[in-house]
Length: 156
Image (tube, rainbow, N blue to C red; front, top):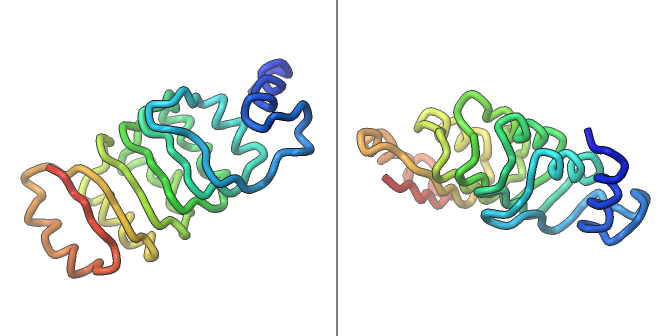
C-alpha cells in the first residue's frame, strides 16, 4: 500500500499530474532494463493502467511477490522479465496475457517444462528468448518445427 505522499510523487513522476483522473488506462511503454522499478511502483502502475504495449522489468527491484501484480494487467505485447524471480511455479502471473508477442525470460529459473507451457499458452508469440540447460538441448530441438511461427532464441 502506498502513502498519499508516495502516490503524489508517483503521479507527478510517471504521469506529470497531481491527480489520478488524468491517468490513461493504456500506455505504450513502462520500465527500462536494470531500472529502479519496485513492487510499490508496479502496484501503483497496475492500480490505474490495464494495458501496456511494452513492459520491461529486467533487472529491476520487483520481487517474486511483486510479479503477482502483473495479473492486474489485461494486455501486454512485449514483456521483458529477464533476471527476475520467475520460475515454473509462478508463471500464473503472466499466463493470462494471451496477446503476448515477445517474451524475454533469460536468467530466470524457468525450466524447459515451463518454456514449453509458455509456448502452448501464447499461440501468437513471435519471439521467445530464454536460457536452457545443456542437458535439455535435445528436448528443445524439435520445438522449431512444432512452433514455426515463433523465433526461439534458447541460449545454453
